[in-house]
Each structure stands twice: as C-alpha cells, then as structure tokens.
Length: 454
Image 1: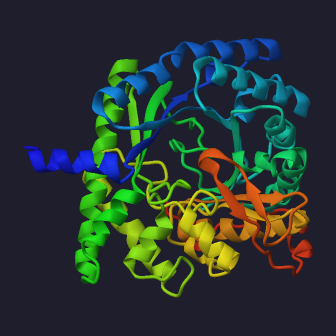
Image 2 (image 1 turned 120 degrees about the horizontal axis):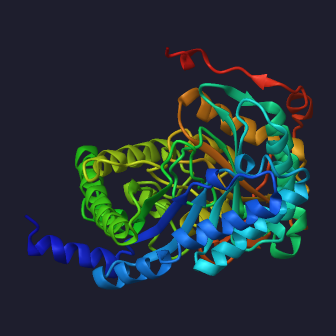
Image 3 (image 1 turned 90 degrees about the horizontal axis):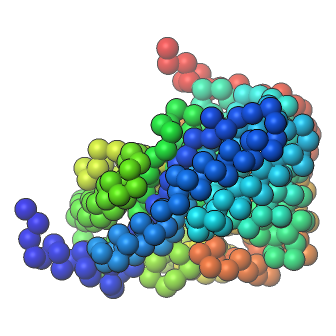
C-alpha cells in the first residue's frame, strides 16, 4: 500500500526537485505507406500520422493536469524513412520532400519533434540509404521539427567506415546550412552504434521495424530528485549511496509507469517501454553534473568522474527495473554538455575535455552528446571521433552515439546558443592531429570476436 508519506514525497519531487515526465513518444509504423509514387507516399504518411497522433498532445496535457505531473514533451517517432521512401525516391530532394511532410504532420498534431528521418547502415548502404543520408543537411535546414539519426555500427556487424566517413561530411554540411543559428541543425542529428528500436528521446528516436503498428513509449527524468536524495546521505558509505539511488530511481520510474499506462489506455495504443534516463536541462538543480558533485567530485571531469558515473548509471538501472517490467530505450544517465549547467561550467573551466567525455561514454547511457566544437574542424576528424565512439559501443555491446555541433564561424572558448532545452555550450577544443588516412581506407571494421554468440 502507498502511505501518505510516499504521496507527500512524490509531490515534493515534482514541486521542489524538478521531477517530470520528459516525453510521451508515440511510435508509428509507416511500412504500409510504401509506394512507388512519391506523392502517394507523402499523402499516406501525412494521413497516418495525423490520424493516429491527433489526440496525443491533448491527452498528455490532460494526464499532466489530472495527476499533477509535468509532461514536458509530446513527440512522434516513425519507421526509418530510408525504408519507407526507398521505392519512390530517386534523388536526395525526393527524400527532402518527405521530411517536409513529416514536419507538416508534426505541426498539425502539435508535437515538438518527430524522429525517424533515419537510415540503418551498420553493415552497408542501399541506394536509398545513401540518398537519404545525403539529403540530411537540406532536410534539417528546411524543416523545424524533424530529427535525424544514422546507425553506422553494431556489435553483431562491425563498423561501416564508408558510412562513418560520409557522416563526417554530412555533419559539416548540416552545420554550414544552419550557420546563422549557431549550426543548430546538428543538434537534430545523431550518429549511433547499436541504436535501440524503442528510444523515446530525441534526436535519436525512430520506430523499429520489429515494433507493432503504433506504441506509446515514455521517458522519465529526475536528476534533481536524485541529487536531493543524495544530499541526505552526504559522507555516508558507498553501500548507502547506492541504495539511495536505487530507491529514488524506483520512485521516479513508478511515476513514468503510471503516466505511460494511462496514456496507452486513453489513446488506445499499446504501451511499449519506460526509458528511465536521467536527462538534464539547463535549469539549475536539474543536472547530472551536480549529482556527480554530490557523490564527491569537485566538478565533472575530476579524477573519479568515470567511476562515479558508472555507479550512478548502474544503480539507476537496478532501481528502475524493479518498478517496471518493460524498461527499454537508453535508460541511465545522459551527459549532454549544452543541456547541463554543471557540465557547461566544467567544460568552460577546462576541467571537462572531449577525451574525458569519451571515457565517460564507456559507462553512461549514450555518448558524446551536444558538444560544440570549432566550425573549422575537418570532416575527417569528425569521422574519427564517430569511429572512436562507435568502437566503444561495438566492443562493449552497448548503445553509443555522437551529436557533435561544429559551430561555423566560432572557435575554442566562444559560446554557441541553441535555446530552450538544448541550452548553450562553450566551443571545446579538438585534437588537431589528422586521421584522414585512417578514415579514408573504406570498407568495414569487422565485428569483435565476442559478437559470435550462436
């Protein structure tokens, strides 16, 4: 039974500690929208999205009001568009027209982002995959709410170095096309290794081909709640620290489970998963970096940071899986630089470097996320960073990702402004040594030996 103390505790989490449901994301399969006629594809996509998601925003708002739980974002993810548009699209511009249809549908139903302008090329690229990838800079520059992702590696198949080389060029071109917005387009583009099919968080969400026709996935977030709980065990042993994080993650996840089940019932769409990631915002008190400080570090990037993050990530998962039978997505701790004030401060001071962030990605939920780098960084260097991060994911059998923002016209120490939940970031230095000859070899890096499980 839930007692009055637990009710009051949850109320305090919401009112004082910034607990929220970060997103309700409706996943929609567009496989039945495939057609050889481009206009027919666009019409089917628009009609299906607007039909299934017409009540998504209103339902999310109603649940938030009735239960007193802030539901910050309502979003849509769709089947990777490279698959949906393959039969109809003959040029990158054809794919861009589909991106504009997605954008129109998102605006009609009122969601803030729609994800799935994506290609899965971890082993090889079809013609449609390559056309979509080459269309990404124009698509992101000419739409407002469309998010894109490309999966370039996996533990089972290895790393597609041709795709990784191409993505370095695509990221730079996307930055150039949105240079007047501090290269904002790159904030809506993620390069993955081992991308999950059921991730509700943008920019990497897409509706996997193994999913049902439509599904509700919910992402919860509560860095402030965890930090507040840890303040009460300051100076105590690691055992007590870990138990506190687990108990707190359990309570956060139960709130998400309640919202997910209610949204599923009201919308008549099956419940998929809860993603219990600690996703920070630029608001003070809503920071994973501050949790690391509460664990005992002077700031993020100090010696011990990777160990502290590993502890946090593991205990969040252990607490969350007791609260829901269907935990999925990414689930753990996000470390986006621009979206976390403590991370921003540490990067500005030089305590948090790109190399330290890469080490942290070995144990966190995602990877190098929302990091501003100089706009004159070579495409080959960006590809090398993607390759490094993909290798971490491939060898460690985990999801990793790269969301780098080469800010055109800005250099180290300057500030890039993205606005809203995306925040701002200091432009961080990148190793100047070349990896051009490495990324230009072409072909694939084979899967690791431990990928052979059959």
